[in-house]
Length: 305
Image 1: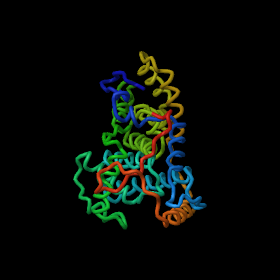
Image 2: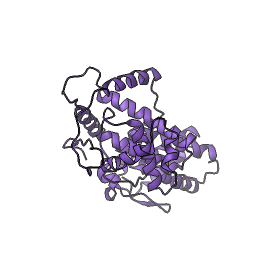
Image 3: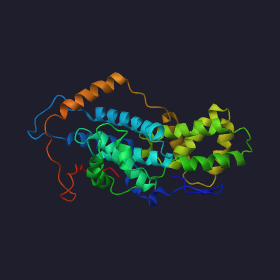
């Protein structure tokens, strides 16, 4: 990653953070973990069920709910951006190692928002969150809090691309002597960053590289592509990983797009999910105190990070 000082802004060394040590994967890792998580779900009778969701279908539903979480946080609860991003990240991390077929997805969603508010010191009572999510109660959040914390390995600090994006834009404007950067430029760049929060990019690349890719993409839209390339060359001049960083940026940039899912697909998958949840699922091994529900723990494949 980028760990160099540039324009007064220092990128996070991901190797020293819980995010870099435990929550950065390859695309292959993610695929294998999701397959493993999906296969771990069994019914009490261990019968073969035709209505069981596949790993790909589970991922589709998780992405649908992350989009709903974004709308809940932005439009309904109107909570700060850092809280929204933390909540969505907690949700994605939880359902990487836990199946949507086992857990109450709305209760997990509410709990992730609640934990993000606490972690980011933003006071929103649990009852206010529950009031906006049908069927979820304060007791649901209390019941799921330790379940979610355990699945997250108690790693609550989230480094998002928004902060480095702000620093890079300021440096870009100063170093390239650009006076045409306006609110539209900045907001479009932030929109690109938000797309990365909703897909797998934040599981694969450091936040600083995602921020740089967003700046590259928006610069092209505003006909500042050449200036950005000059800026990037100067930034990476003394970086031994310059070639890899540029390759990563070329991989990230095309993925900074909105996730679109056919509503009909969601309707069918939701129907399938409800059907599968009717029977009692086999209990997962308890690792939390007895007063809390058992947690479904799925061990990742040996080659995952």
